[in-house]
Image (cartoon, rainbow, N blue to C red; front, side, top):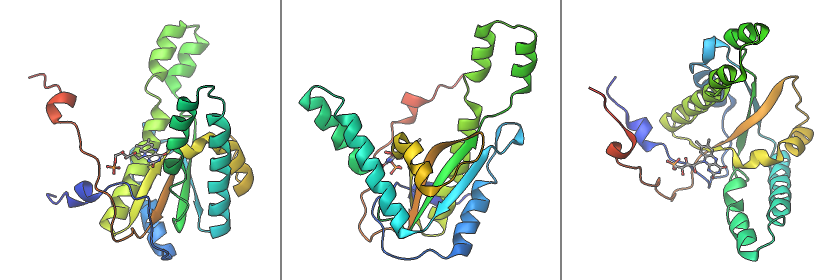
Length: 212
Ligand SMILES: Cc1cc2nc3c(=O)[nH]c(=O)nc-3n(C[C@H](O)[C@H](O)[C@H](O)COP(=O)(O)O)c2cc1C
């Protein structure tokens, strides 16, 4: 497979057309997401798909309220303004016809259980856990979703910003699965005709080390 265009075409989309997405396309994207690798294939993810306009609007209101409250914690006006400047990026899902809320449960690491039962020291356990494996699995699944969406002509944005309102969002969407934590959200829709370019990437020599 040499055609990697869908990788280079993907960029975060924050403005969407008011176009409904067929359910079969959403299913295809969720299938692509769940083809992702996950630690010990535990597939710790769960996806909640929201298409209800009122719920999406309400979510944006909730995120705005929490964000404003958090910004007000800053005593300095400059800091408060800086905090508020990120708000548009936390509610950029508001015009999307579909928002997918991504949950994860904890990854069950057999080694951790055995070592803990044998009183291994905390440093060893911390090293084992430092990879945050379930989070990496969620990231892989979300990226699959984003790339598949690009290949199908849709726009997406991967978001963790709105998760500061996870408790209020959970209450709104009435989703409460034992042991699952809200990790991120994906907006999905048909992009507006004019959308900003993806920001530039660091050159490879800054982010890659070859050991020959
Ligand atoms: C884990 C993660 C969290 C992100 N959270 C947000 C967010 O809350 N809001 C937002 O507008 N973009 C968010 N982004 C998108 C990044 O800002 C974006 O990917 C980056 O600037 C590169 O731009 P591109 O996606 O257009 O290539 C997030 C991306 C990742 C991977």
